[in-house]
Image 1 (cartoon, rainbow, N blue to C red):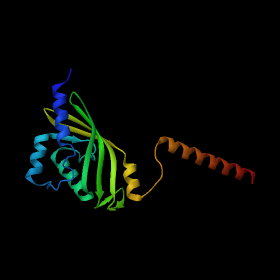
Image 2: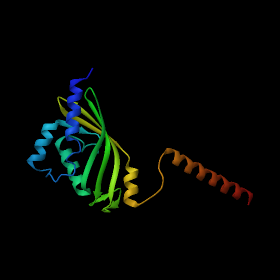
Image 3: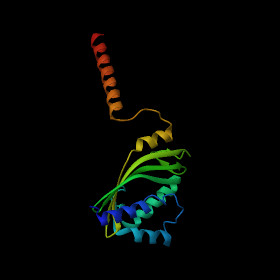
Image 4: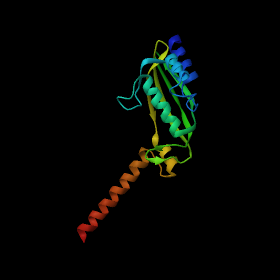
Length: 177
């Protein structure tokens, strides 16, 4: 049986989430404020932001300004969406050109970047009241630095094992000498 509230929340999420992330909308303008009031609760909590700066409309403005500073032509392409009760989960890919500011301590490169994301949106009364995101920052860092190292837990374990073996050989050589 389909939950009509979960389906409504999913429709809202699919219609608005990330669709306008690259738009040149003034965070201090009435259009941005109206959009926030329509789709977010007043006490909206963005768990992806720094504590103390993670609530309400002021957080939304701060995030919008950061995206406008760091990126050009930013998009979030949704690949799948699941809704259950008051929660909507969106899996997709963030893409943009890194054209301003400094990200990960690296000055803007102008390079095209892509990054996998999974967003969790909690709804209350048809509006988003809470947001969390899981994203993998390593691929974006690699794209900005042209670092071609492989990532992943298996690769990390292999590299750690090889380093431990090398240290053991060095320690054994020092004891012999």
